[in-house]
Length: 253
Image (cartoon, rainbow, N blue to C red; front, side, top):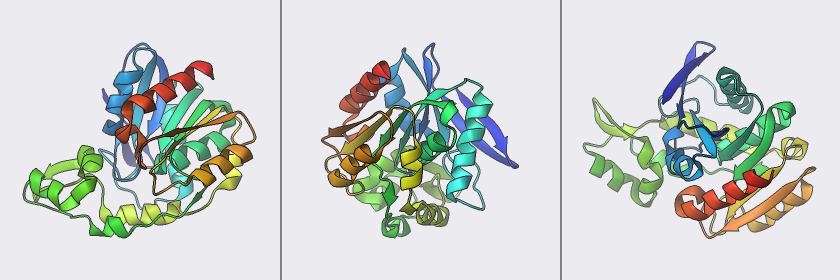
């Protein structure tokens, strides 16, 4: 089921995958949207009910004037409040991972468990790839060809428009968001008190094994690290193992 709510005059969209399970809020990364979590939602049902946000500027949510850290965290807070489900577990990948742990750090009484997928406490994002993405293509196949090897990761964001086929996010907005994501976020990471699972892809070009281990060491609460044979988008590269790790963690936290 798709739902909507408003934040400062902007419409934000989300997908509630439904079912009788305990709510799990999910936050996607750059280039993606809520629908990217459909396979995980199916794998975790019926014990868990995944509710995924189209973050500002992504999917069916409106574009925004700003993509700063506090803006994203405020959106998560508004999303959580809108759902009125009480304290919850929250999961985030990449951009969504930082948003998730910053929300958990700043709203400690609202998060029962935290899952962060392949992003560090210090982020040095390179937006060079973003600037090479096509804005329009005549067909879906042409768009996939132009995107290249990243097409499987971006496919959920393909959209047919009056100008042909494009992406459900704006290129310039994404660059601004990636620039704002960069920085040292150790203070927030160290402030998280809820049980935390960090999932690292062993072939990731975003998070190193050494940094992942350092994050576990410097976490002030209960934290564990799971490393899976995958790149940066672990839930796509190793979906079965990823779902199993999430399920095991949530069952024990």
